[in-house]
Image 1 (cartoon, rainbow, N blue to C red):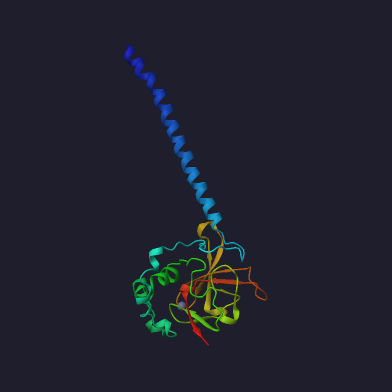
Image 2 (image 1 turned 30 degrees about the vertical axis):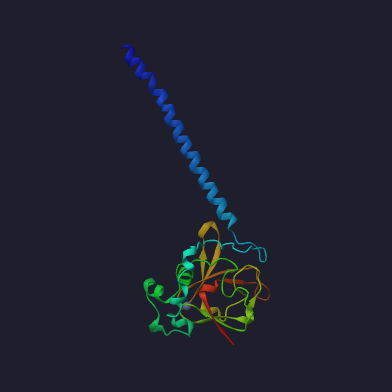
Length: 216
Ligand SMILES: [Zn+2]
């Protein structure tokens, strides 16, 4: 065995230890990112009524600021603003929905987005009337069941009729929530929580962007 061979062999454990160190570092960094992600999800958990802050985002949803642009021209094309849209005139694809809705309405109602708290059209409205689905025009909530939850979104203790709302288990962001949608057209409305006022004890936390309002 030559001196050179011995030298070469002595590098093997050295290189192996460097590689092992590198792999360990990658594992530690990856685990760190995972923990940070979990913490972020926990922080996004819905706060009790009255403790939300302006600008706070509802969990599970991220809305791009750009979605707010160019809203009004599209709104004029939505027949649901005027009334209940007949079954045979309801869009069958996202492409069709997009033509009718504003960017924000599309992101919220068809893509399960969420408007930022305290920014929607109806969160603090006290007007008497009926709230309808922004997509199909179906009446969903009445002002009589609207209450001031302080959460920054329109809140109702119950829908106009239970059969008009569909509920879905939503496990996004590591949380367990109940998503509510328009039963007729599948529009995402928001979530229902069990911290509402009596007698129902429910809080239907609904995006203004998913609603159109008819004042009485
Ligand atoms: Zn609908």
